[in-house]
Length: 252
Length: 233
Image 1 (tube, helix red, strand yellow):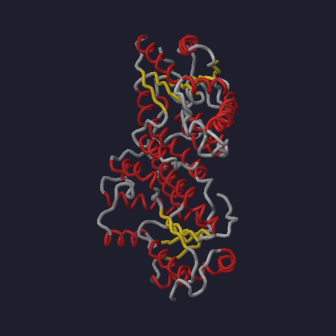
Image 2 (cartoon, one colour):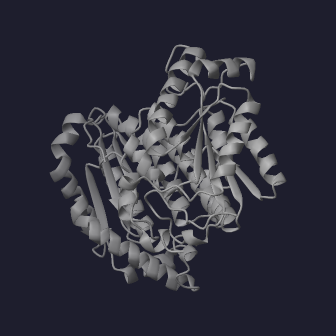
């Protein structure tokens, strides 16, 4: 059974949300571009559904409010870095309030393909202030678990070249132009992204999952960890930055 | 907010709906242009990149206080990054009809914390002068009801469920916004204009305050056409 420990917000409680009502499990898969997150989400979903759990999966730029507009803006390559960050946070907030929280209320397993951390890592890689974006994203719920699929940048290059076969403008950070061509820009940009994620790993209690292994092996690893999760209470927000909201966060 | 160290200048007007701030800003811009200054204008909620999403959200009443706040911050960021900041750097006077303070007042009136909203706009450029058009709620309401066709859903704060009556909801919500504006006026260094004075008198005060605050800086830094080259006074 799902545990009764209520979820909490990192810093800023959202108006109108009673955390004690959230009975589901919030599970986040993080990791850089092309690391194999969506494959794992699909496998996990299938497994959880076979186990009899209702599953919602949610990923970036899929909100009803902002998803389409983000795609369009990306096609035109017209984003400034702050605008991009805030557009993605808007998209996240819309999914959080209209999809994720309702699903948690209904007792779903919610699998998130990238949470606030990728948005934050991208912003930091583009030179934005870490504390600024952390506070902006402070209305996020602290997940039950965050699995960080970690790979070296050279592995990401392999996956891009063998997989899609070409570099993506945004995944290469070409809006900032970290290098003279897509490949070099990809290397430098993704190195910064991975570094930013690495730095968040401890603060946000990521569980690091070695993503250089074959997909089947990674799945087995994740499956075991999630199975163990059922018995464990929700993760606490990092104490130093948790804004006290006792009435909502700790009563059940 | 970041101090403006560039040769261009940023002028902002704030106030609740019906305070007359847009009228006053238009007059001020015209006056500055007539003196040959390069003046660019930026309006709240007008980024072409974000507009589609905002419109959709409003039409379908999809917004929560958080997403309403964030979409406006996104809109603001886009205008700042692509329009306001480059022009101020280039030496123009940018005049903005509403700025981050609008969010400080509105989003807090919607129930978000002051601290969160202020941090959200930390990337903004600090205005060189901000005029706050202070008007009693009843006066503003009379102007709006008399003029425009209808009060809009979100302007009235109908999303908050304050009242089922549009006008009553508007009154309560705009009253809260007014309180927020008043509370931050001193802290933010607003130049307060009594928006019940005659249009001419308000404009006279605005011009005087602008010259007193920025006069030398306008002459020193801002791009200006040769006197008499483009404009007939």
